Structure formats: structure tokens, C-alpha cells
Image (cartoon, rainbow, N blue to C red):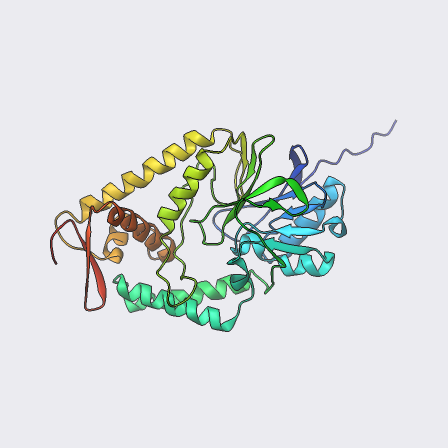
Length: 337
């Protein structure tokens, strides 16, 4: 008797009650991205993947492996604007007619509005100047934006989500703002069984990167992402979470232990920076070169953000001094420069 070939899912698997994970390839060093198809009053897709044909094929096949088609998806919830999570949003919207939901700040990143792009570029050029970055690195601002465009298509959100509100179409799920990795980052929490879907907020065995972003407008101060991130971690530590499903990597079932380690690691890095400025004043770029000698040239935005974030933390607890001289910020242990 001829045996039928057994086909195993390539892209998807059921991970919890009413939750399916779809894993797609990305062009980024972080590796594959995890999306989640959530059953409820409305079938909801959480995040969509980058703008590549490989990701599109994986999404279509992954949804079909679960037993649905793209047309069954009625809404798309986005955790944050990064291209590996939003790149094919507009394509999914076109194909399905689904509505998109996200943080109030998400839309300005998705639209690729020239006014905001120019405002953002000006912010980063000024940030580089004030933190002692040589002009040879300034082209990275435009290169990073070009890379974002390469793996994203302009789109829009249809419903803005508020912190702690119930997710439309998913009555058991609550929105939790979790800024730090990005200013528009949010997660969702199912209180009845403690399941938390957290995007890139908490990732197993990985130090979640924070990112410097411009303020809401020119009249506002620069956000302090590490301080925000630590506050969001503490919010999560106080939730009765049983399992975290992340945007990358494996599920997490010991969130309080991981959060404690992350909070401790921030102080360890801050004290390392404190030691580096004990003898002489330094700019954030000086410190970035010392902290990340093998990474800073290729990953300047990431490494500079880590440095500035920890300096914000040291300033908050009054461990360092900062003064501006000739348009550049210098950090010292104490006393005037």
C-alpha cells in the first residue's frame, strides 16, 4: 500500500491557545522574525515581516498551513515601525482589506512623509554634532533611511491604540505601551492566562537594543529611551505573565528573572562608562569608541544610542556632569570642564 507523504509546517506552528507563530526570513543580522496569528472575534495578524518576496511567500504559506487564507485576516496589529515588522503591511492591506492598528506615533514612520523624514534627518545630524561624531559618519543618516525604504512600503494605520485599552476584536487582550526599543513600541497581554506578546521588548538571550528617536516636534525634548525602557520593564515585571512570545527567538517563561538581569546589566554598563570618564572628560562618541571598538563604525546608530542611553541614566542619578562647549556635550565625573 502506497503511503501518502506527510507534510510538516515549514513556517508556522501553534504556540498557545488561539495563537499561531509564523516565522519569516529577514535581511537583517537579527535573523528571522516571528509574527503571530491570533484567533478572536476578529482574526488578527500581529506584525507582517520585511518587504521581500521570501517574506511574502512565507506569510502566505504560513497562514495556509494554519488553515486560513490571507482573506480571513481582518486586522493587523503592529508592535513597532521597524521594517522587519512592517515592511509588507501595505501589501497585506491591499490583498485582504484588513485594517491596521498601532501606537499613535506609528503612522508618521509608516507614511514616509518627506517633512518628517527631513525633520528626522536634521535631528540626527544635530545629535551627531552635539555628541562629537565626526562629519565622515553623517552620511549614515541618509543611508539608514534608504535602507528603511528598501525593505518597507509606505502605509498607514487605521486605528490608534491607547495604553491599557482592550484590543479591538480581541476582547481578552490588553494593550501595553513598552517604549525603549522604539518610541512607538507596544505589546499585548492576555490577563486570563498571562500570555504576553511583546515584539522586540523582551527577547531571550539578547540585550534588547534601545534607539534614539526625535521628539514629537521641535519644541519637545529628546526622549530618553533607556529610562523609558527600564520603566516599561518594571511594568512588565509587575504583570502576572506566564509566557512571553517575542518578535525574535524562543518563548520566555521566566520573565521576572530576565527583567532583573536586564536592569542589573544597565547599571553594570553605566558603571563601566563612569569608570571611563573618571580621569578625563569625554563625548558620547569618545565613549562609544571605547565601549564598542569593533562595532561602532558599522553600527554607529545602535552603539551611540546605547552610550547616550546609559549617560542619561547616570545624569538622572547625578553621577556625572555634562556641559556644552563649542556646541558639543562633554561628560565628566564632577566639577566644571
